[in-house]
Length: 20
Image: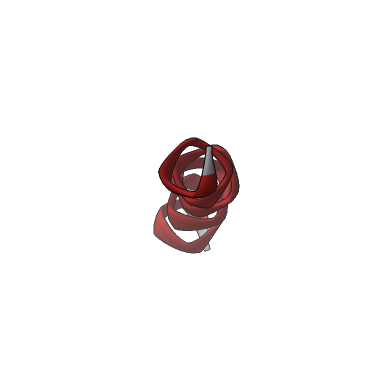
């Protein structure tokens, strides 16, 4: 579950950072 939560948070974060 921890890894799933981490991925769910890092994926959108990386996408936002990539856009910026």
